[in-house]
Image 1 (cartoon, rainbow, N blue to C red):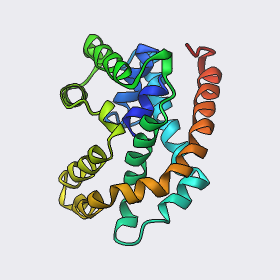
Image 2 (cartoon, rainbow, N blue to C red):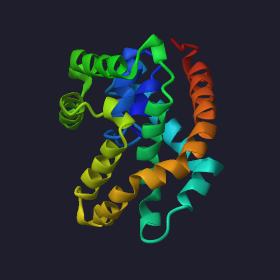
Image 3 (cartoon, helix red, strand yellow):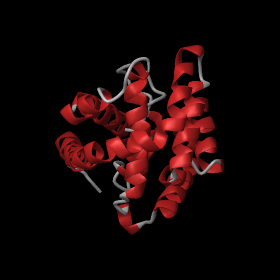
Image 4 (cartoon, rainbow, N blue to C red):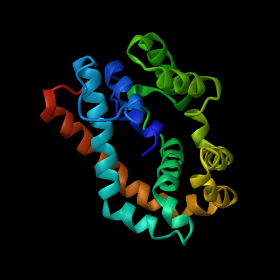
Length: 199
């Protein structure tokens, strides 16, 4: 799952959201530098990623991609799943997609003291480019695939996926719809077993 999904699965908890967004930028098991609830959010991010990567429907979805794109199928599936989350919006906290994105932006801005420089730069990018709410637009999915392809020469073959985004999205809607309720339930259950708190 990509950043929109992680933000929804913060369950309206500011500290969990910080951990969920920071999760892609924090390495290693030692999270002692973070307040406990943010550390829980980072661990939740990792649990979500592991659950998604190991799900049989996601494994089937990755096999839809022919080489050389199959090597990048996990990244593409994550990006397209955020598109379907935006299109099948669950209205967390009663918010529409744009209001949810503003909650994310505001929370990250007010919690900036807990964010490293790389997360701060990413938070600024999320806000200025309206990344989260633009997931609803398939053209934005194509732009995301192109942007990721430019991060390094190793990822450059992903550029060929951009013009095929609509085709990939069509094939990945059903796997997303099957995965999402299971993922949401797993995340809630995991949080309850960690500290008994799901707000």
